[in-house]
Image (cartoon, rainbow, N blue to C red):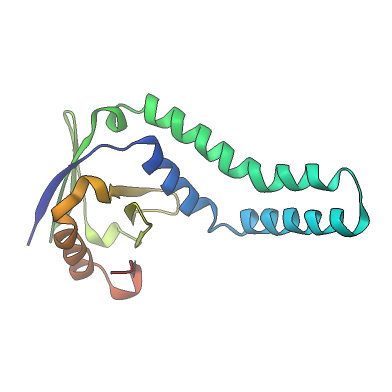
Amino acid sequence: METEFDVKITTSALFDFKMQVLYRQPVTIIMTAIGCLMIYGFITLRQWYFPLIALILILYPPIDMLRLSVMQAKMVPAFKNGMHYKLSPEGILVKSGEEEQLVSWENCTKASGSRSSYFIFTGKKNAFILPKADMKEKTEDVLRIISANMAPEKVKIRF
């Protein structure tokens, strides 16, 4: 079984991916927890600088990811022009302009999803972004191919 579809990586798809990666890192979780403690500290101790620190710790990471997403969506030619994916038992074939790359399923470390996209990771911070809006009726085929070619413990997609 194989399927093909075209994808346009938008700022929102990039932001979604970056947030998925960001909030799985212990540093970000710790920063958010400290920010929440600062809010609690302000309520109990009434120190004027606690809410300022809390805002920085809680709001800076997502704002920075949004800034990076906007820049990448504008600067990377593959994101601007779109990509063509072909998923088959051999692997994932990605075409962008004249460039073509085949990644075997053995090189894929994890598959996960969010409300708007699916991600097939090839590294800790590298993944194929598959927006659900672009796949439309091919979504079921894509999920079947992913689950058939990746080990079950690597697939973290809620069907």
